[in-house]
Structure formats: C-alpha cells, structure tokens
Length: 417
Image (cartoon, rainbow, N blue to C red; front, side, top):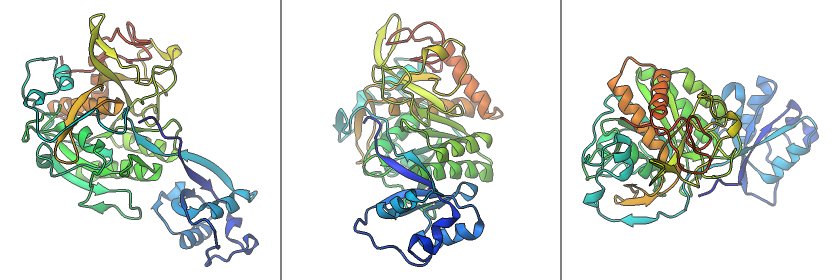
C-alpha cells in the first residue's frame, strides 16, 4: 500500500503540565467525551516530573533520555498542546511497503516451478538454480507484521519470536502474523526449502519481531524499541545481525532515527525498503532515507537495455545527489527484485506481491550469505561489498535509471555474480 498519512503524536512536555493550574491533580485522569487513545512521547525537564507523568499516564515504552511513550485521549493531548510550555512534534505511523493491500495471487500449496522464484534466480544470477545455500551463523531480524513460525519453509530457522506491539515489556514466544507481509518477507530472505521454497540465505537464523499490526501499520516507538532490542541482542549474544525493515513513512521519526544510529553503532547492518512513491524524484521514505540504512529499490522481471528495469512504483532519490557513488540522506543505495515476487504466506501457503518491501529482504538475505562466507568482516565492510556488487551490475532501464550511480537504482543491482 502507499505510505499512510496517519500520524502518531509526539509531545515534549514541560514541568508545568502536572501542576493544579491544568485543572487536574497528578493522580486524577480528566474526564473526556472522546476516549479514543493516541500515542505520545513525553519528555519532562526533571526526573520528579518525569516520574509523575509516568504514574499519571502509564508507560508504553521508556526511551530514557528521549522520554517515554504513552497513550492518552485526544482531549488530554489538546489540553497539553495549548499549554505555552509544551513543545509538540508529530511523528508518522509506519506501514508495509507493498503496492496493494491484497496479494496479486495466493496459492494453498507450493508450486514446484516456483521453488526458486525469479528474484532468487536473479540474485544468484543463475536461471537454472533449484536450491540455494548459505547464511549460517547470521541472524536476520525481520521487523514486520510478524511471521508464521510454523510455516514449513521457515520453522527450522526460527531462533527468536517476539511481539513489540504490546508495550512495556517484550512479549517472548509470540509473533503471530495475521496480515501475511512479514511471512512473505522472511521467505524471500531465508526460506529453507523444507516446504519447497528457497530464499536467498536458507541457513540464516530468523528473528521474527512483530512491530506492525494486522492492518500492516504500526507505531514508531514499537519499531524503535525492536531496533534497539536487536542491537542489544547482537551485543549480548556476540552475534552478527542484519535487520530488515520492509516498512516506511514519508516523515522522519526521531525515535527510529536514533534507534537506527544506535544499532549501526553496535555493528548491526540495517536494510530497508526505499518506498513505493515512484517514479517521482525525492520520494525515498524513512527509515530507508537514513544514511545508516541501506535503501533498496525494486526491480521488475523485465529486461530492457540489457538490464532489469526499475519498477515505476519504486521511490527515487534526487538527481543532484546521484553520480558520486556515496550515500547520504534520501539516496537509493542498491536495487533488487521487488515486482511480482512469489514467497511464503501467513496461512501456510504462498502468495505473489509487489513492492520495495519485497526487494529489501533479497538484499538482507544476500548480506547474510556474504557475511557468513566472510565472518571476520564488519557490517560496514559487508555494506561496501553490497555496493561493489551493485556497481558491477549497472541498471539502465526505468525512469531516471542510467549509467553509474543514479536516482532510481542507486549503485545498481546487488547480486552474487
């Protein structure tokens, strides 16, 4: 689907919020005619005031120096918004990056002809390949709608299954996918072939982190908490982690930006969908637009000018930033298969979907496969390897695609050969 225009609200609250001048004591909740809750980020100037606010409103996630998130009514929010000491910043909701809400096609059983879908063959640069290998010892954290961890092509890979949408504490052992998107993404990255489907790196371990709801959208704070958790797990377990985020928003969230920088600083490689707002220029969504995330554009199974074609729906960067083979904010970095991609589905079957959501896990899987083959490499070295592979596979077809580093395909198609 296209990026949602819904917003989560972030409020930076001053100490005067909790004084009687607001008309409500610290232990009383104001009456309201509208009980619908909105998510806000609260940051108080002092620890005492911060603790009072936590007691009053409750805590969804605590981000320490950044504040804490909570739910409150629109009336409560509007009252705080009117206070001259309150600073308010709106933060976008994040949604899956697919071109349609429903799949283009669904299948109850595995189609033998699809054991290695076109995108996998393209990544491996081998149209005859029937089985994939690699990724052992590398963890791919799929931050998404959850994953069907009982799916025959994924079950053997599951190492972690966690739900971040409930807040306060991570819920272990549950990451139910009722939407399908997360299961599909995981399949492209690491399907193991036990049910017949192969992903790019079938020996990778799956960390299935549910950060989006059954409607395919979710709060920035849930996503940020999952990113930080994956980074902390990477440090605690002394393991290598690739985060895949096939989700996006047109507006930046400070919580997610800070979380991405935190994870990158801990040696985690972050891969993200570029967005589905193409072919217009300057449409890269967040978190893909961040400098410490690898933004992936979507390719079609169409050959023009001797190369695959960048899909029209795939978001583009800016032409003025193209050509320098360096990555800044709002740059497409690499490209991968993202149109009409066949993969696993939440009901145990399979489905075909299009979107940069589908391109991102191909690169996450490639990163895991390359990293497993070079275990002493750092995440920045693996990122450089992905760029070099793309550099050697220029994309010359699609709006704004052309020789060199372009606004549509970035460095090019990152693949194995």
